[in-house]
Picture 1 (cartoon, rainbow, N blue to C red):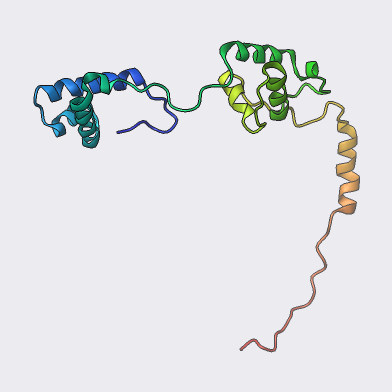
Picture 2 (picture 1 turned 30 degrees about the vertical axis):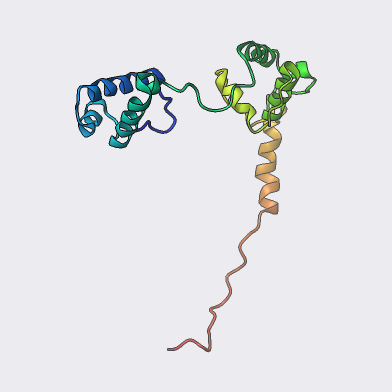
Length: 175
């Protein structure tokens, strides 16, 4: 009955469900029936009943957000986005391609917070930026030279199958 992977929980709705369960428990409805009505596991309803008995409705309130506090605030994220829009050249890089290491460098220079390059993409995703790949072909590409190489040079250096030899007979093979 939990949440599918990758789906954020609605903490307000979960707290409302616990309040509904508390009301049903106060009316004397059995825990199994409460679980069916509110769409929860029986074990959860049992835990809620214990919390309700020990601390009242206050004990069923939501605990708040779990996990570590964010190291970057909304103002930091705006500064990072402005830096991303200026491009990596503004940081002294030669090409206009953002890599995760370059994004980590931008975050550190703009906000003073160090991020491992392997985790900098999370900030990009939070800002609504997606991974982009550059074109696979260089602008300086000479199509005529490539065609000449494919038609003349490649057949010269390409391995060719050896001529087929006569049949091989094994003395260990049974007739």
